[in-house]
Image (cartoon, rainbow, N blue to C red):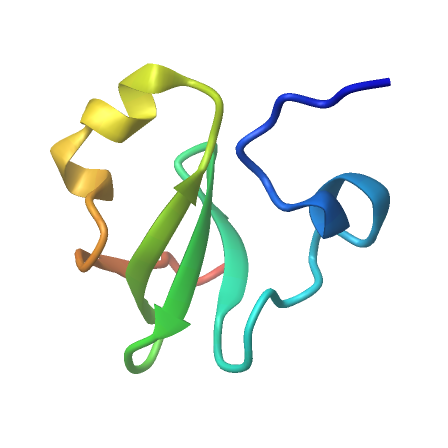
Length: 74
């Protein structure tokens, strides 16, 4: 079987919530999985997009380096 994918193999064959590198986290924001760095309280800096949807890469709100704010869960 050959896999043509943009995501690392540990996400396919291992735990998807595992960290890829120290300090980085995988989160889901607006239905898009992102690799991010913490940048304060409930704020994250986008490092890369983990998506197969090409429109996610064209979204200016999802560009690497952008700071996003997570809404607190009620």
